[in-house]
Length: 443
Image (cartoon, rainbow, N blue to C red; front, side):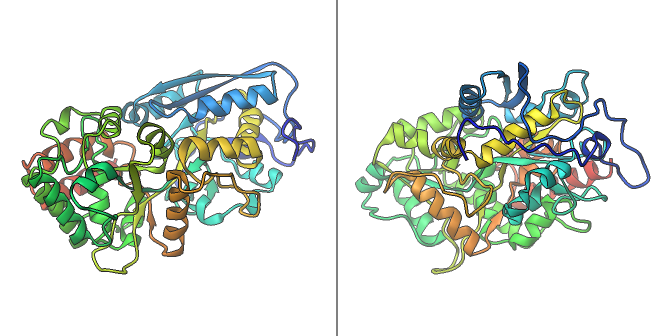
């Protein structure tokens, strides 16, 4: 498809009532604020599209710039807030008289039940998204019981992430570590060696809760991935209080007791722990492929990126990964235009290359389409290989912070701050998070 050519076929097979609202059993969603015929042809009128995104992630800026370059009549207004604030405030933003057209929405919560998100099914049919990976789209669906994993499509990803461990190879060489660890026990040996040598074993921060990358990574090695996914997707009867999760959380408490984290961990936010690691502080850090390009730029060849090692040698890997999920507001005044933008991100070669260059993530869309080019031996090449390996081993789980709208700010942040400073046990952490989850789901 030519980069500057809009899709020429208009589809008018669905009306906005179908596209705009979702209903919960026993109740009705608010009336949609707009009506629109579904079209795959971009308007020629001047349009300003608004995006509410997360602080510290430049992908939407670069995609918007490229889109405006190709379609000068469309410009963007992008606002940003922290992950914590954006997650907590999303329902209020979506319910306002002037909602953003597109919003970074890691946690759907009750936004579908409350009629705040556009149902993308009509555009799914109009654009022919049935050729896309259904495995990637499934977590972005919500059914009539307000359970994720099936039903209508309410989100799309701007890249599809994978998480792992970054290792400072300069420090590793000083410690005689010549390769990434292949088991969790070997990883712990490396942590102990770093501590003994006066090197910070793990650079992490928990001012804004991002130590959950480390906490869930430990849990994933002991827990059944399907059990964690059921809990995150709010499947009835699913629980966080499992022996595997407790064992993983207890391992984090053990690392805290051993002094493997920064002493000021609860004062370090995401941007700070990333920059401090890139500046040479810490043997390891837990992060995602979205940091690959920037980390490579800052550290050159002095860094490796690999999957969290399993408990047993040769065992399957488990890693957090998900769509960098965005939703369209039901009240958007530019529904066709913003969905055109989402489709363009998945189908346009330049856009797909931007997604991979900026995030290190696979761009999604039709798997038969040409894949972005990456530099041989780069962290992004490693990240794409890690994604393929996790897919082959069926070891991908969503982020536990995405389980409910309030769980990140209400439980994961405060409880993990206690856990990583040795103030509560792993069992207490798990039980506290589960208790909050049950209370939130009960309304």
